[in-house]
Length: 426
Length: 171
Image 1 (cartoon, one colour):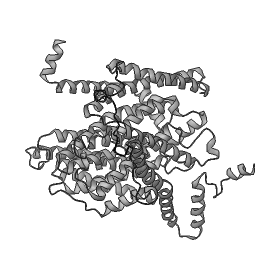
Image 2: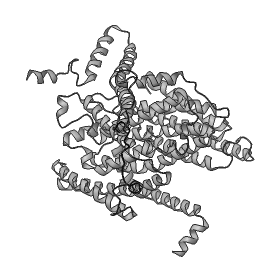
Image 3: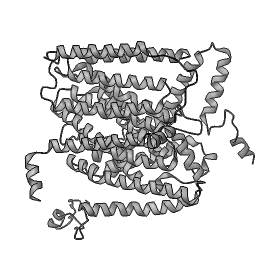
Image 4: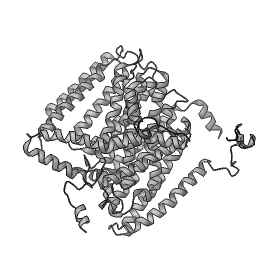
């Protein structure tokens, strides 16, 4: 009981909400510092805290090191294991190496645009985190149109990538730039449609209120709209150039796409911020679909920001998983998939969700009790599978029954013959 | 307009918008002109934020920066000699004439308008905007969507090649 009282306090040692401790520090400093200085302190404090709690573990440990390590595991290799304990210092060593490298600029490149493109690529990534709620009070800007803000800001890095590709004066760069712009135009449409369903149900555009809706109704949107979640994941991985869909920098087709002429830390900024955008998209998905900082009442005891970061990394693991296991798609395949599969399925999903929203209001006489939500969740999960299967059948992607269990060449070679060395072992 | 931050951001935004709008006209490279145009759009979105019209600011960025600017970039890439010197053109005189007329109209409106300020800004949320758009202004909204659909169909008809027409005639 005393433990509960201790946990429910709003004092500075209450680690469940880090805004308490920062408030105490800032109010204490404001008493004897001249006015205005406290804002500078707040900025420094926010920078240090976000670096220690989020950027360092997320960006460097999970983003760079974890991704390489997990992909190494999936591809039966070791991954980084030389620098530091278990190779943990590898990302830092890479960063130092990149800073030492010379950043070359081609002679006939558009130098000003090429110089400014990485900067424009980095800035929106930092801006994106302004509207992400890390906890009940841990949000920088709780604006009422946060979802639109997220979409608006995340449309800027595409322009930066286009600038990078165009300014290099290289045909492979230009191909990559064209591809990234084409992909973004195509996949933005189903992405927004999938999010529109969530907005219809929660009835708000504010991310914090979406979390509170999921908390008060004891259900996550991912159960309510699994189809929207799948559409969001595929679209966002296409927009972010994650590997199964990274045709904008496909190294086997067009050298490195829009990054071909970049080197040194300029390239490093693009690489690091690709991971940054993936983490921002994961944080957004964790907020909108996975319940944000709430965890069915468990957030009273565990720090909400820890729950939120764990969910973010859970979603980020999906990116790593698809990257490690799926082959890269072709440009026309991706384009066809966006317009012929994702868009109609997203439209059907939107119609279903709108109908359910109206039904919900009618059935409960506007009181919106949560009992029906569980029914909707079961219906929607079944419907998602049915819609995907039916639409795939209609497009003619039906799975063949006579699919060989093993690749044909493998059978022609009469199976796997282990190589026996002279010592007897393999 | 109160508070140092608001005033400062107004002047910074005004400077950014005007300088980049000038850059659109002055820059000889078509691609640079589009980049300046994008900066202008972002600056105008900033003005909407200052006027506490959050939704319109976000819509401005999504539509103008995310969609229209990208389409303009595509158009430039598909134009032959995209990176050519944009200065020499026979349309210089008509353009000057047109812009002078337009500027005169704008200055007349600015001088003529009754610039009353209200102390309490009306808070217009997304909810009010949506119900107005689908309630009071439903008809113009639908007309606009029909217009856009017509434009879409027209664009598809324009880019169809004769071979495709022949193929469709056989079916």
